[in-house]
Image (cartoon, rainbow, N blue to C red; front, side):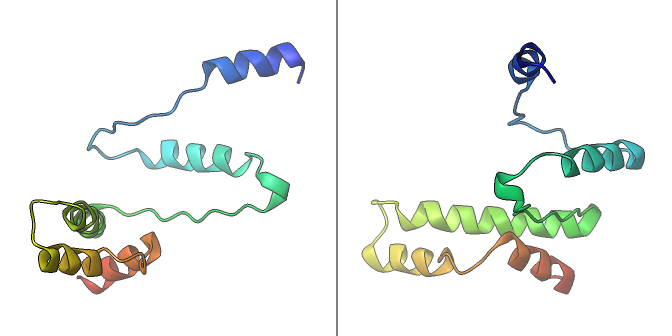
Amino acid sequence: MTYKDFCQLASERFSARDFLNKPIEQNVLESILHTASLAPSWSNTRAYALAIAQGGKKDRIVKAYLDKCNAMLKAKDKSLSESERAQFAQESAPNWSFGDLARSARRGV
């Protein structure tokens, strides 16, 4: 790849910040994942994890994530009492991960 090719590629990339709530065709998803697996990573660490969920599992993961995010926001809400903020801070403590959410979804939480 030439410098000019790279500059063109870099100038054409974008990041999506809004998503449609509709299924992705399996062949499209597989193509995206294959292409992503070719992307370079810092020092070849490949430090990422990927989980794909659909239907009810996806809905449970989204709900758990939004519940945590809402608790984080309420923990900083100055209109709430100190004890209420402390409770939300406990609920939003950074002792969870997307993996935890996925495991919760599998258990039906």
